[in-house]
Image 1 (spheres, rainbow, N blue to C red):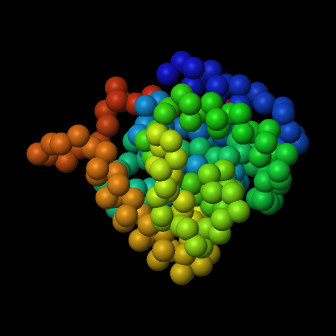
Image 2: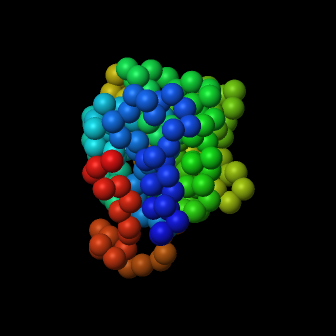
Length: 206
């Protein structure tokens, strides 16, 4: 979708907050322009800042493993973050940084119109569940307008703490059932997408 790529170019050139000064690459997001499922993380890390792509480090490897477990490839979902530039030292994003990036995420959601949004981590969760604790509500889908929002732990947290890994695997198992309900009836399971089925929106460079 041309509008989505234009938005990505605007994000790559953004100077709205202090994070622009320390980045190597902004990370708009990537995936099909008509994705039914959108994953929203927190912010780019070291590897993402180098490649301009979301979730390409250890967290990305875990996310791909979890997706495969429910019959999906990352090319079938849209992946982005609440902030599009890496915070220094991978610190938490600050309130004004979140606010500076908010219009970009708003626009991505508006253009893609996903049926399911999975928030990864407490900062993306707070967009939809302000004041809630992720340890209490993770894995519990909630309908918000036309979108089903599913809060989950961030893969990085699951990699650090074994108890969250078990919880995340269980949450993905439940997500798989939700995803299955979105698929059109068919005798055969859906195969991997062809190049014509999606538009890759991140180009491995800045």
